[in-house]
Amino acid sequence: MRLASYRLDGRDSYGVVDAAADVDDSAALVIDIPANLADAPNDLAGFLARYDELRDIVGALRGDAVRLDHLELLPVIPDPRNIIAVGVNYVDHATETNDSVPPFPLLFSKFTSSISAHGAPIILPKESTQPDYEAELGIVIARPASEVPAEGALSYVGGYFTFNDVSARDFQNRTSQWTQGKGFPTFAPTGPFLVTPDEFGPPAGHSIRLRIGDEVLQEANTSDMVFDVATIVSYVSGVCALRPGDIIATGTPSGIGAARDPQRFLRPGDVVRVEIDGLPSLENGVTAA
Image 1 (cartoon, rainbow, N blue to C red):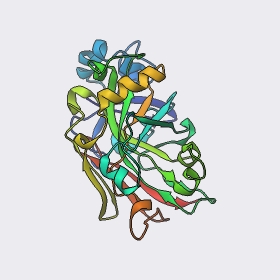
Image 2 (image 1 turned 180 degrees about the vertical axis):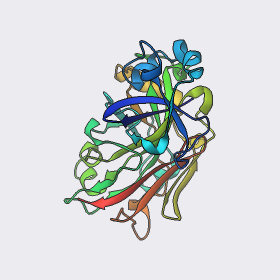
Image 3 (image 1 turned 90 degrees about the vertical axis):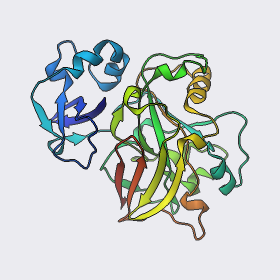
Image 4 (image 1 turned 30 degrees about the vertical axis):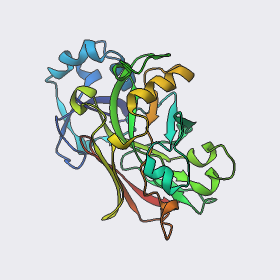
């Protein structure tokens, strides 16, 4: 199932998108869940928490549909409680940044105010001269998870989406703590849709790439992760009580702008596109502050 959060006629809502539709298909139709389902959860995070109960009911909805291009897409989870990210989770990325492959998942946070939507501009901070891109597989937690074993950890994942961990390298590298370079407004584009695990399948084995214009700057496979999704969910749940709607970004492959020769940072006018096989693509233009 493909799900989207959006604003329609001044009202924030969420709905089911046509099967296999991509965001480029402007004629794709969306069925609004709260408008067609009595006692529907208030938001997409709440729906994911009841997905097993509501999946067949929602799949059978035949209410009035709205064209995708009549909606204002919001981040897949507009108000996440946590955005937790994993660093150095591809061997080639560790090599290009002269880092060692970590023995445990390397965790950091992005401020929730950095959340952004497909199509929204990435706004470059005035103070940074090194704004960079990072293509990542994003996941959303569907139910409370605390100290869950890796076996069965995927059952706590409500869906997958494309994510761009935009990073101001000069701020990131000022101290040993990365958060200040990761949390500027618009630095966490997500979406455009969330794809549930029953459609996406196992999270390993999906090609992931990032383009700026026609140039491919990152390309790998989610099977190349040092720590797979189940391991990440299990580990994070051991240090943080995960709740429905929490976002985890699973790390980026090699090809970041800071590691290229010459370096290639984001510039006003760029159009950044993150592509993961099995998910709709995430595209954001870049603009100056």
